[in-house]
Amino acid sequence: MRYIRFFSAAAAAAAIVTGLTGLTGGPASAAEPDRIACSGTALAIAINTAQNGDTLELRRDCTYHLTTPYPGSDSDGLPAIGKNLTIRGNGATIVRDGLNTAPFRIFDVNSGGNLRLENLTVRGGYLDPSIGEDGAGIRVNAGGALSLVKVDVLDNTTAQNGGGVAVEANASATIKSSYVAFNNANNGGGLYTAGAVTIENSEFARNHARTSGGGIYQAGGTSFVGASVIRRNTSAGNARGGGINIAGGTMEICETKIANNTDTGNRGGGIYNNGNLRLVRSEVSGNVVGGANGLGGGIYNTSSGVLTLKGSEVFRNSANGPGTSVGGGIYNAGGSVTLDHSTVRNNASTAAPGGVFTSNAVLVTDSKVVHNIPTNCTPSPGLVPGCTD
Image (cartoon, rainbow, N blue to C red; front, side, top):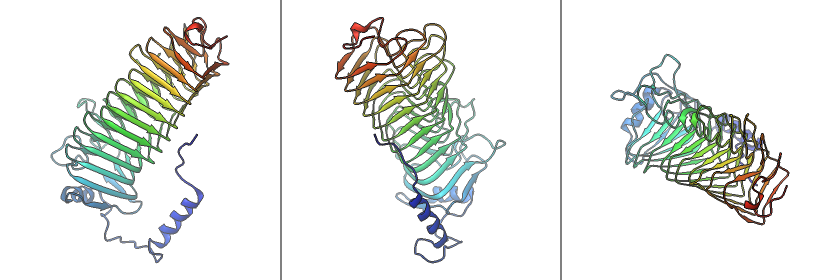
């Protein structure tokens, strides 16, 4: 199974050499005259005056401090993007500056806008709870498009949806080789999407949702997650889905690890699925649903959910809260579940079964439910063909 790898020793050495010598092998230019001056004001002016299709180069490793909302906007730190624009960060950071700064998000992409960010950190966006808007780091509105390549989205907070990134209905985003972490929202601490999203070779870690979807919340639309890691995210309160909450739409997860996420409520430590979810050659492991009468340490599948596991593993998850916490591996509340060449093993719950709980028949093809405690499938082993205790 292939997982994300961000850096190598060779790449780090090459980066150091480049920083010392410059791209041409000669002395690095301290002035970098072709790049945007290291100032939040200069960056805002450059974005505002850029032509459609332009590329802006930021100063290498500069921190662009944003101290006030952009004039004419109550909640955006930079001019809204309504054109095709690329910003190459060259290791720079764009940050809302400090606790005493007025609340605003960092980037806002409007209809007709297509924003590509490369090698950049987007940090510290904060939205006023009284405004109730999505996307404290980056928001993509209907008709807009976003591309992130080697971008860190960190420490952004909203009382609504999508602490790090929000992709609204009829919008799209591609996230590659990026790190989305330490963001906070009501739903979708790292990412909220109702549009079309592709995630590849990226990590969503240590994000928090006050309600559902600590790492990712999908309200609808379609998503693909490939060769990525969703780990150590949390949801609390009336929580559902410590790692991922699929409230609707379709999601495919391929060669990805959903691990060590926690739901302190009672539905789905790793994944809560109310849509159409397909897991291919992926791993759901070490997730916990910890609330009273918690259901589905690894995966909770609703009565409307369609869940397919192909060549995947669900192991070492737990439903360990008080009361009748069951389904350490998978809890199926009456939806459709298919296990195809997959394994559910070494999961645990307070009450039986620890492996798979289901209220209706599961389709099983060359799969195993084994070594779960206190039981694998009892009290309903007949609904999971081949499962014995």
